[in-house]
Image 1 (cartoon, rainbow, N blue to C red):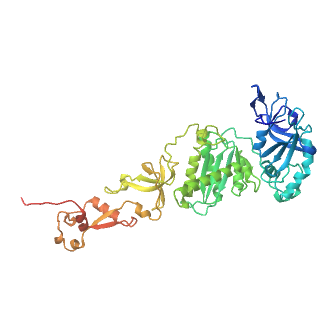
Image 2 (cartoon, one colour):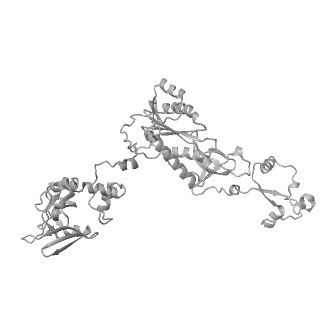
Image 3 (cartoon, rainbow, N blue to C red):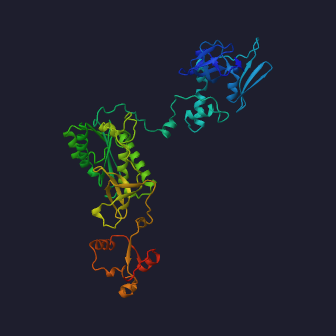
Length: 502
């Protein structure tokens, strides 16, 4: 029944639904104040003129309702218009001006729309070939796209489309793709029960130590990661032995399964024999099927993206990629993962919650303290460097010196997290050093010295500290030093000397 006082389409006839969401729950309030439960929402088929049928969507299923109500307001929101004239209610689609239905008025002055009792089967039998025809007309567009065009009224003149079970040979030849890989439900139950491994590289730019690859190991149970840097892929087997020794001693378990691709470095005969002799099961993925080792492949992508972001954020050169990768592994081992609930990988591995208050911004400026044995009395006590990570062997930070092209480890560091290195003029970033030279006239004739007290030529003997300071200033590896004459210093100073005879 067409009802202008009804806020939503609703029916109590479950058989009229072609599909229904039985999890939908709500309530409706009748005119007498009574509330009825809504136990689903779906699509029904109704009969229109000349025996045709059409779909009405978003219909509420109210089991206690005795009438089928068609909401005028909901039809208007769906871009339909209703015309009541001459005892007939005409329902018209405003998009294409198509007459959807004509509902005659009954003797008791209501407009009743007949419901279909044949269900979805009768509706499909009428549109089976037409849906496939429109699939062909639309250049083999998928049926989901065709249905969306119809449902959202994006085009005019398109009939109701249903997904076909018929095989389209043209789509097979033109669109066929690999079958989806099922997500494995099996997970390791203990550390090192399954270890994933993969090699990433070669990189175009060598690292500071001449490396072009990195080898990644991932524990399936804890998602703990280890990384090793290689010059050649052939170094994979020795690095695996190194990883095995460290990992097995740390957790007290032994490696049971190693999953890798079929790269030559992993199917190397001594490598395979070693695994067989030590009871390590090998799982090798099928060629050109990286999805079977998806854990390591996805971790590699995450690592490279994070490493690239840190380098570019601070405008660092690409030869620091290994330092960035090492720092990325350090951070990811202290980051959440879906596979381990409420724990970080390093927490699951060591059974101890990690501290992260020491983390710093990768690539920022770091001022490292220069220890007393490495400087003279009047030398600067700090050195400007670049923070590049955390030391695995010491409780300190790894700092890169762009001038000397070397990495040092220090614990006494002050960080400027928002600053970055000026690569256009790196020498100017060091504090200026000054060397006091005598005026040319003074050097030629000591008697012309206006202040004999301040003349260094009058000193009886240079001190050992002075010799050390002069050696530092004349070091060929040091940057150019700024010089000033005594006359220039006297002109800009505010010190006066006074002497009088006794």
